[in-house]
Image (cartoon, rainbow, N blue to C red; front, side, top):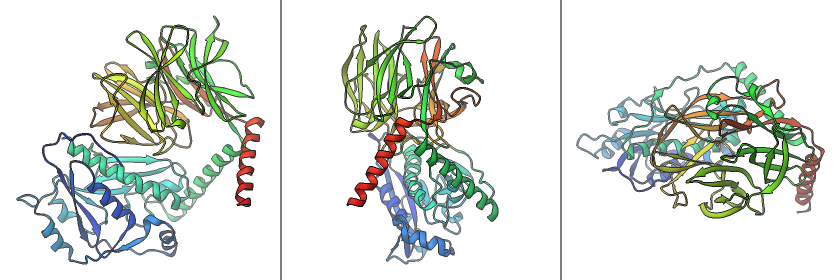
Length: 526
């Protein structure tokens, strides 16, 4: 659930939360309870009569099996209009700051007159309310992820979340209900801190015919099965590449065709997550992943005059578990690194001396599974962008900030600041071009590390954050690594990248099979 620091709002934001009278769903009650705990927000539950809906047998079976769709009986059966009169006396005009419709009222017009910022409703891409049967079904079964938008007065999109979802619709519903809390809290916290939620026109997609839904569902299940088959029988083989152009050139087209790949493929390991040593044109750090162990370690690579790997040495902290993404940067004449140690639920800062030795400096984040943490300085503060694995593997962006590199680090008022599997998880070095800040992020529309999305940051403060995708760096479909691209890092006048190809690897396949059948045997034994 999002949290915030001390509020800078002069008065609390007052919101009415509309819930069904008589019977409500577990997810509706949980959402109302979570909003009541937001700092700087006062919420009042108003029971209303929701629009009557017919539920078919399939939906009733899903509702019976899904805990958050269970019905709760509510004792309050009062008339909706009377409840509105009783609950609306927060100011002289009886007006709320926002009315949040979680019940899907039949006629929201009377409520608009009682709200300064309109009636907010969670709608899917087809304009279907989250309280309606089969909400989000079309986008989920397509295999490209779910989508939910907080819409004001049926026409303006305030906040949108896009999340990776398996085409198994009932299983994906829980992710939608969790994301609803993010959408509502994000919108209300914008009001708390004196702003307004970002507004864009909401255009619902045309509803599909029954046959088109069937075809989309079959296509989505095929995509899901293909991903599952790849994960079971094939392996990701990443490779490091160099582009002889500065990182801002990623904003231009045809970037992938300029990549010069280093070395060939190895049956025992691959290299990924490259970051160059500042001030050096032949030294860089990367992750080296061992297929047999299933664990990544850090290496320092030395390139020869022709740009080939001449030497590879172990590097970084000698800690147990997986270590990757050695984010290297320079500050005040010193070289630092922030490796990913999400498996240990910490994020640590190291100093690298002239001999390549790593010295522990500080723990930046504790008890956080921070993936791909990327540091940048902006408007007098240090910022740390990362994906919190407790929220999801690659569909969330979180921020922490500090006045000093060593901390203390504080979490952004909105946590996470973004939910979108197409442009959230960090993918390299944020950079400034023509006065604007750009942040590379992974595009995981159909799976991990497909491409890099370049976001232009429009607003970055301790309370508010906005960014927009401006372009993509996609792999060359005719190149050596056509299946993925998930790191773009600055290295002076050059740029380091990595690319992916799916391969058949006996070492990793053997490890997967041993783990799979070992777990099955243990289950049978139990």
